[in-house]
Structure formats: structure tokens, C-alpha cells
Amino acid sequence: MKYLRLFLLLMLCLSSCGTKEVQESAETSIKSVTFEKLDSIRIDYLGNPIVHDIDPISNTVLFMEFMEFSNDIMLADFEGNILNSFSKSGDFPDSYGSLISTLRIDSDSSFFAYGSNGLLRYDFSGKLLSKVDHHDFQPPIFKHIAMRFGMEKIGDRYIFEEQDYRGLNPRDNDHYKNLYLLSWLDPETGEKEPFLQVPEKSIFRNGKYFFGNSWKPIFTVSEDVIYVAFGIEPVIYAFKSTPPYSLVKRIPLDLEQYEYFKGGNDYRSIADFMHLRNSTGRIETIKRINGYYVVAYFPGFNKVDIDQSLMNKSSEEAKVFRERMQKKYPNRIAILDSLGNRLNDFVPMGLVAEEMLLRNGELWMLEKPDEEVEQDYFRLFRVGLKVVE
Image 1 (tube, rainbow, N blue to C red):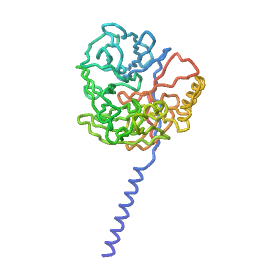
Image 2: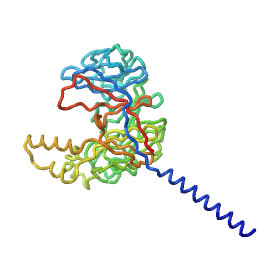
Image 3: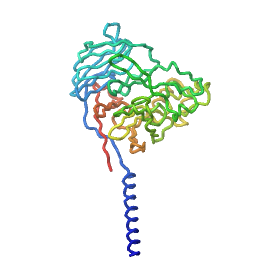
């Protein structure tokens, strides 16, 4: 009986160990996640359009053409037909003034523009539906108008990048401690509320000095969580979307050959590393879809190329150098799991890596135009994630 009990105990231990090994093997199994093009929209248009928003519910694409004397707003359907075109810039009663953020579709028949004249809603024919004035308007120091920069909705409010850094004193020891990087916008009242400060574990809280806007927040939202990457820092921070905006987790990003500036030792050195704006690695876009992070990033120059960028060059030599660097360091896309482990890292073929929108659970990206051929159209692709076990 004694030997029987020992035998049963041994079998139980072997069974438990085997189960644990199977579980660990399943958890650490390597997956490859790639892009696959599911659908596309071709819009016949000759120019330099900037896509502002896409709405899969009303099948609407909202884009603009920035020209010298007019900023035309255009709406197209998913069949590529341009439905309407009008301008709301200039000195008119229904003008938004100067845009602060990208245009945002807010229903199946209207969109709003957040500009220097307030928050204005228009229908798809261009008729002004409502206007909400600013409470306390300060012209933004930084603003970015492109497909990847804009507002994201949580509840009845929108989140966008805080663009007023006048309270920043870069001479302070902990100069980024009180810096707010995002703002809420209430579309009913026009009230703006800055929130979300730089977390303590960020490189921007290490007491060193950085060039202006190197902390630019790149963000996306999923349910009640805000995912933020701060400019050059290869980390995603996940915050609760309600006060006190608690940090849920910090996800270091495993990116291929990522070279980024880690700060200068004194304030006087800031002028010396301003050149790093165009050569240091930076996060361009982040999206969270199906439990994965899709991160577009610029990898940054190596030290040899940084040194070469500082050498005196003629205008022709500088042009050749820029073109060579653009080919050598194209923007890349990394697909990572929930822990930040890299599952794929690649230069997307035929797509602009950083220009992407996530709407109604669908990921849309802009086709990369052929630089050698003048195209009289632009195309958007709906992209899915293909998981290979």
C-alpha cells in the first residue's frame, strides 16, 4: 500500500509538470502577425489631399486640399465619388478661422471643425448647423494637421493634443513635471480641459533636457483606456480615462534598430541638439486592434549619419543627403503583443506607414503614391491583421 501511494504521488507530479510545460509552451508560442489588404477606396482627385476622417457607417471620406488661397473641404463616398466641395476658411461668418485639429465626422450627416473661431458643426452640404465660442482661446504653439493627428472620442467628449506649452519653463530641474499633454473638448460647451501629465518613469522626468516638442503625445483609445506614446520615447503608457487618470501599465516597445535621443545634461546644450529633430527616432502613430499594438515609427539615424548630417554641405549636397537618408531610414511598422513583444517589424509595401485611422473597429491606411508618376487619384486601404500560429 505504501508503494502504491508513492507511485500515485509520482504520477500526479509528472502530470502536473507536463501540464505546466504545455501551458508555458502555449503562452510562449511564436506568432507572426502580418497585414492583409481587405478593401480599398479609390478617389479620382489630382492634387495634394490630406485625409481628415473616415466613417464606415455613412461610407464617407472627409479630406481637404491646402492651397495658397483656399482650403477646400471635400466629401466622397466609398465608391470614390466626390459628393461635395466647399471652403470654410477666410473672413466669413461661418468660417472656422484657422484649424487647430483635423476635421471630425460626428454623425452620418455632419462633421465639426475645431478652429480659432470656435467649434463649428456643418452638414455634408457645408451648411453651418451650430457654433460654440471658445472660453479662453490661446493660439496653439504647435499644431499638426494630418490623417494621423486628430481627436478621439470617449463618452460625450473628445481628446486631442494639448498645444499650449506656455507654462513650461525648461530651466527648471524637473521642467516637465507640470506639463499637460492632452486636453478634453466638450462639443456642447466648447470647454477645454487640459489633463494627463508626464509619468514619473518617463525619460522626460530624468532631469535631462530635450528639444521642443520631442515629447509630442501620440495616442489612441480603447474602451476606457488611453494609450499614449510620448514622442521619441519607445514606450506605450496606458491610462484610465477618468480622474485621476491612473497609470494602468507601462509597455516598453521592442523596435528594430531604434535610435533615439536620451536627453542633454544642461539647458545650454539645447541649441546644440536641435538638429536631432529630423534624425532621432520617434513614434509616429499607435493603434490598438484585436489585442495587438500597431506602431508606426521612424527608426532614427545611426551615429555616423548623425555626424554626417552636421557637416557643411551645399544646397545640392544637402538635397542628395536627405534623399539618401529617406531611402535608408523609411518609416516602419511594428506589430506587438499586449506585453510589447515584437511579432513583426517591417516597411509596409505600397502604404504610408504613419498615415492610419481606426474607425468602427476598422484600420484604414493611405496608399503610398508613386513618386515617379503623377497620379490623378489617391487610394485608401482597409487593412486587417493576419495571425499565423
